[in-house]
Length: 140
Image 1 (cartoon, rainbow, N blue to C red):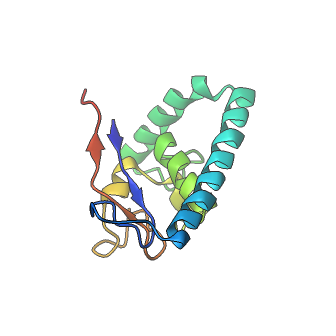
Image 2: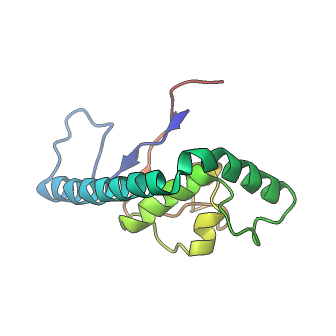
C-alpha cells in the first residue's frame, strides 16, 4: 500500500518554518469539503450497487483487457482504484485535461509519473498542485 501525499499550490510541507497562508488554508478547506462529498456519495452508491463484490472482478477484467490491448475498448476501468482516485481529483478540480476515457484507462503507476517528461499515461494536475514523494505503508 502506497500513500501519495498531495500538496496544494503555495504549500511547503518540507519547510519546518512554513506557516500556511490564508489562501492555502481556504483552498485546503474547499478541497477537503469536495473530497468528503465525493466520498460520501460514492460510499452510498457502492452500498446500493453492492460494489464490494464487484471490485475484484472489475480489477481482474481491467488487468486482462490491458494485457491483451483491449483497454481502449473496455467499458470498465483498467484499475478500479486508480479510476476512483482520478475521478475524485477531477471532481474536486485538482486534475486537469481529463476525459472520461482517460479516467477509465488510469493505472496506479500513472500517479507516479511526471507530466513534464511524459505526455501519455500520466495523471496531470492543475498548475501549482503536485504529488509529494510516495510513502509505503506495507509491502506484500
